Image 1 (cartoon, rainbow, N blue to C red):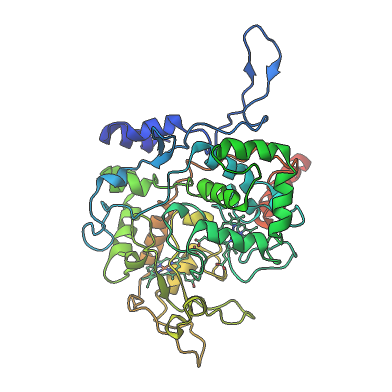
Image 2 (tube, rainbow, N blue to C red):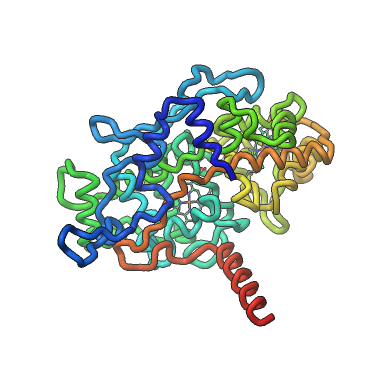
Length: 433
Ligand code: HEC
Ligand code: HEC
């Protein structure tokens, strides 16, 4: 396979991005834990990872400023308008985003994200439900929390979280920092308390040292919860996925997409399907809430979504428009994971406006929810196109160890167990046969 990124970047741009890519370390997937052998000393020294030395380099896609902050550098920044050309124009600029964290804050956030010490019983980390190998989600309809029970909603991807203006399916948090309070302290998610979390962080000499590296100007000696939330936010804003084959195409490299994918993109952008009105490029979300009338799986009560957040009956059943980036990695789909695969999710739009709204429920469906009556062929092409939105080049590296000494990640998502089990079965089958 040819690496289109280097082709497109090399041909079209003056290497700004390449600098970012080479400079990055913290979030790169490649294993950086080579042994460093000191001059005249045959003993291998500890790698950065093993001695918990935080990276001083910005992750790929970021450039370090003179002040030591990581600034996003992206090709979409060369386009001036958010309008682009027509519905879902390709050469549109990105909306505002969060950046400006230091490399050390981002890297500290990475260790915290994968450390199950953040949960009350030491079993769950953020990555238990937002795993790099599952599109930063967890591969199940609804996540399983510390109590072993399913939470009411599906785990969203965290890719491109830097561009979100509200958080959770019902938009009830305004920042990543505020969002973190949800999973950390909810009994059915990570089940921790602020007191216990502060104590476990401050009791840990490695974390005390790492927080000093990340927050060298802090006024007090103790680790604070604000620093924890900042570091988690810093790490999450480094999860950039804007270099899929679709992006190469958008920047002018026509051959990056197949004919079927281009056909699908045209349906996606058409005034009939109207997908890109809400799943607006380049993020494939417009950061708004829309009522589209997705049904709950059998047996689950109606989730009123954003009606509750804004105390607004017209938002009954309204949810944030999710990004479609890396969408092939995050099945099952929708807020309660009721749709098995992408085809089912796309077909939903073609089954008639409001076809799944329960009888007697008053829902004010968004006016862009139409009756596109897509043919099977058109649905297939859209699914093809959605497959071109995958870019996991900057997948975060899972630390080989975390400061608590617990196994990184903790409880793995069930979907990974399934994957691994079926692999093992295959292996056993082949050795037996
Ligand atoms: C038990 C599984 C679970 C754990 C553990 C978990 N999350 Fe989540 N996460 C979810 C679910 C489910 C949602 C959606 C909840 C909702 O919308 O009501 C979510 C939503 C989010 C969102 C909002 C994304 C968006 O598009 O609005 C962010 C950000 C996030 N989680 C980050 C984290 C961080 C950081 C941690 C660790 C401190 C964490 N999560 C731990 C399951 C989990
Ligand atoms: C009016 C705005 C709107 C339009 C138009 C729209 N969507 Fe959506 N889309 C949403 C919302 C809101 C959700 C989440 C709904 C939920 O979970 O209840 C969603 C969810 C999805 C999902 C599942 C994402 C996930 O992470 O689970 C896919 C796939 C999707 N849409 C594809 C499409 C396609 C393809 C079209 C065009 C045929 C389209 N959408 C048109 C608003 C829209």
